[in-house]
Image (tube, rainbow, N blue to C red; front, side, top):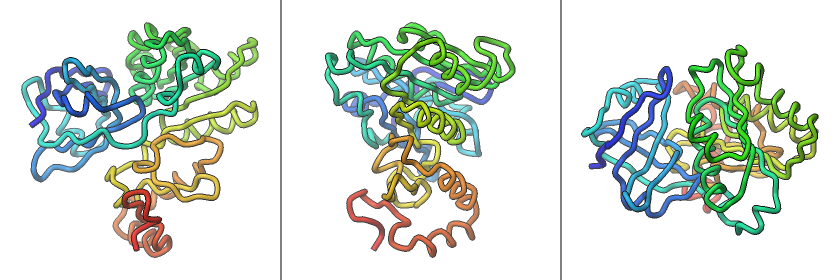
Amino acid sequence: MFKIVKAEKLADKIYLMDVEAPRVAKSCYPGQFIIVKMDEKGERIPLTICDYDREKGLVTIVFQVVGASTERMSHLTVGDAFRDFVGPLGCASELCHETAEELKQKKILFVAGGVGAAPVYPQVKWLHAMGVECDVITGAKTKDMLILEKEMSEAAGNFYPCTDDGSYGHAGMVTSMIEELINAGNHYDLVVAIGPVIMMKFVALLTKKLGIKTIVSMNPIMVDGTGMCGACRLQVGNEIKFACVDGPEFDGHLVDFDQAMARQRIYKTLEGRKMLKELEGNTHHGGCGHCGGDH
C-alpha cells in the first residue's frame, strides 16, 4: 500500500497528493509518469509525476476529475492509501540527458495549459536546480483555474500567467502570449508545450511558422499506460508511436494532432475501439514498444 501524506484541492476539480513511494521517488525523472490503482478492482490511471523528493521517498501527483475513478480519488485524504503505485514509466524529458553547460546555451520557453502545469513544473525545477533560467507561460480559463503559480514563479526566470477571460495576467490564449514575447524581441531555441491536445496543436503550428523546435507531451491521450490498449497510438512523421511506451514527449512539428484527436473521439465507444483495431491491425497495440505491434 502507498500512503497519502498530503491531499490538497488546487482548483475546481483539480487535486494534488503526496504519496509515499520510495522506489519510484528514487528512480523517477521529469517527464515520466506513474500508474495508480485505488483497490483490487479499481481502474488503472496513468498520471504524470509532478514532483518528487528522493530523500523523503515522496512522489507528487496532480489529477483532474474527469470520470468515476478520479471522482473517487478526489475523496481520498491523508492516511488513505493506493493499492498500486507503479513507475516510473515512460521516457524522461530529453532535457535530463543534457549537461548544465549545454542547457545554459539554450533559451527555453515552457507553455503549460490547465493541468499541463503539473508535468511542466518538474522540468522547470530541474533546470532551476542546474542554474538554468527559462521562461514559463501558463494558461487557464480563469484565475481560479491556474495551478502551481507560486512554485512555477519561484523556479522560472520569467513567469507569464494567462487567462482566457482576462481576469488575471495576460488576457488571451497562450499562443498570443508567445507572439507577444517574440514580437518584443525574445529569442527561443526550444519550446516545450504540455496541456490539452488542441492547445499543443496550435502552439506547434505557431512555433513551426516561427522556426522554433517544439516538444509536446501526449500524456493526455494515455489510458492503459503499457501500450496494450491502443488508445495512445499516434502518427509522428512517418512512424507509428505510442505515447506511453515511446514517449510521452515527441517532436510537436511531426505529431498528427488531428488524427490523435479523432482517435480519442472514436476510442470512447466499444464499437469505436473494435473498428480501430480492425483498421490498424498489427499496429493497433504498442506492446513493449519494440515489437512493432501486437502480432
